[in-house]
Length: 253
Length: 283
Image (cartoon, rainbow over all chains, first blue to last red; front, top):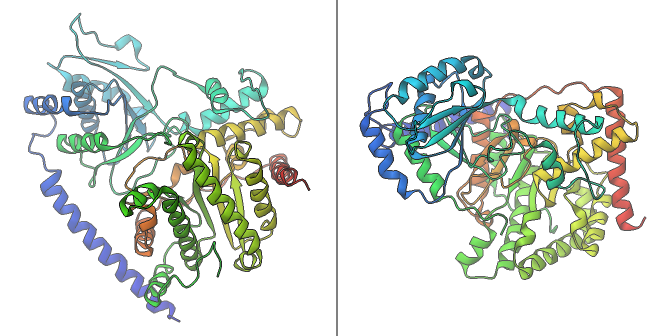
């Protein structure tokens, strides 16, 4: 019906039009919605007051926040700010999902950057795999944030490994019928069990994709876009928390 | 006219747009979380059962769009294990809807075979009423030779339950000496799942979570959340999702080569699943 060349031309035109429309919308969002005047590289007093002012309005208590961290587009300082803001807001677990596989190698840098940004802010930051370096609150009542970095290998490969251990008999997994129930299998593969399942996953850019993030744990978490341009600032962060607050879980009902 | 594939639902302009988009990459597997039937019913001031019926009609329209676009595999989240928590009246009406539609499918089997639709149903089937199980088994077995459109329906399903059942099959495989523990890897587990990996997942009604759907499979899937309620989902919403996919889809993941033992185990698993359907039907 349509010649191949004409179809390809029209395909190109459709995508060009969509690209222009999306870009215009994104420029608008960047200028008017995600715009933030705070100086780069530091958490200001205004930032903290702004966060504290908005904390009591949060209806859905957020326990575990996961950020899809892409080392190609996010700076270490961006990620450190997210931790400090979460400390102020009172989110007890903040995890980074290492999309490119490079964040794990930059963990020490991230640690130092967080310590630098934290100066003067009450609260305690604990690292899952640096127990010796964990901070103290010196008896002051303050928020605590547990930080984890997850990667692809913590997801599907870990579950496959658990199945292998069960098959070998190295890991106990009892069953009362032909097939394991979710409770039976879940009990066996429970690892780092003190960490609650993520409630919210934040991503930047236009693509929403899990990239293999903890398949067992993400069943009910909300996926919310932090920004369209990969930029991370306090307005985007508060905007995402507002969106999360509007989400209504029905648990199948 | 077929109940499952709604014919004559695309205008000339829509077909023209489909042809244009087919010049680009088309997802080979699309999954749907058809959310918003009840909100639609409330909005229209009709009862919940009518909302679900409208939702089914939308699915049959969507299947026709998928066939026109050349999408060979579609997965729909029809009923979650968690949905058993809903009121008895609503659960009964959903079961009645499934019974009616699958019976119609068996009545219209010639037209379904002509379209080449293969029905695959996955979930914890033992939780469903016995008569419905038999009807589902009939539909699965009657369409198993078709291959133009694979329609996977998740019934009494959750993603965690699917992972747990796949783990059971693999552990049983080791117990029966079909495979050794060293044959178990991520790819084997993926193949033992009920469903393959979708390239695009569409959830309607503005919710932005997976609700325990295809947790294992969505690692490199483009997740597309649409604001419209499922019964109000139009071909234009669908084509926008396809354009979004074409703009952002990650490159295809390379499949690892399987060993002969793994291939044999998976073949046996497939046979076992078919035998289970035959047993339900009493063949």
